[in-house]
Image (cartoon, rainbow, N blue to C red; front, side):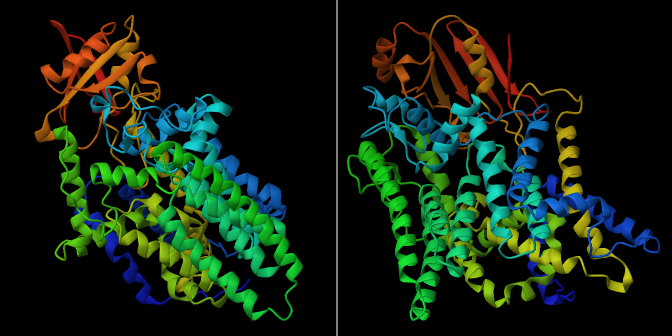
Length: 605
């Protein structure tokens, strides 16, 4: 397919937020490495300009890939297999993560609850000692989140023996579904190219595939919904209808707010097209497709309502709503009220202060411009970065494609929704991730034919995009662990989050597991340095856990807890931003940060 190779210089303005962000923000060294590597590539193209004969056509060694791209099943499986392979290859340097972010603990709690054969857990009789961020203690003990991410984590535990397996599976499925979707709008070879780029960018070095936070499941839902929508726009059949409904269910159980806007655009376009073609529409096929989708929606709706009823007592009340009423967070949207709440624990009040500060970024006129800059720049870093920014040069041509306007509109709605939320992490816009990848692929189609001054700048950027990102991943992994040996603590790298996970409690857990018996850990914080990273998280069945983390509520309030757990060894941990002090009686040891590879390291006195 011949496409225009000219670009509008106005499109370069799209890079201004990213440029400003790179200049003023810290912890973006991963992106700076990528930018430096791209500069070296472009310099090499300039120096070899008289020898390079690269054209828009793929090189000879790509012939097997071109042949495989014409086989739908293999074309979809290759990116999935690449995603899994790359992540497994990085395990010696970037091992499976331990949860650090409160959202991760919350998703894992729900996954463990499902594996125990329950929808929720009874409240603990001393639940006041176990309150934590994004966790419900009343009316039942459970996560505040929807079940989508937890279901994949539980599936990974069943199939691979570890929850991280569910993360890898969800990302691989997303890469496969993405390729399937891309094949409907670009030639098979370019669809395979897009799938492989996603396997590298999301599968190898994205927090979607390096944490339990989520992202890939919602992106999978978006890809299935888009692929099903495209099929239904051509012909009403049961297969596309099932894909459309399955994608909608995944979005409802991962990113319901953004997913609603995304699916609303697609659904309205389907209804409008059916209305315009009502005279020649085969309504029997429409009825069968609607019936198939209705079965999926009914089954999913029944399961969701049953889960909510088990957790909150009402099939119409979400755990998320109960958490907002109880603790006053998350303050997700500009119109979310900031309510005065009396907290039992001062650290939870400090977390509320953090939420209010984030909320002001979308409500305070003086802070809104900076908030928008940070959001757009962080999304650019995650999805594009220097290696893929060449696609932005053709934004006006790409977005003006008539048959893709509905898709661009759906992604635009998600983008606007994310920009109006108090935070705009990349997983917030995950439903639109397939659309972003389609944008990149169509941009690279044009970039491949771009030869200013008869120098193959465009073909070079297209051919070297994936190798460039792989090179950066390797450099970063070696930089984290220069001794080329597996680190003692888990690291956490991503295209948008490059700092190591310095507040990992896992080394402390391993130390206690080496001790005989069962343990009770009373946790307190230096409130002047409290940074919202929580340690008070437990298993679904708290009383039968070897290690129980509880809040230190003072000598008087602790008595009932000490009496209840009289058969456990008592430990006290005090946490600040730099060190964790663990005490048992007169003995103590200190947990400090390993500056090389992140995490926490236990140091005996």
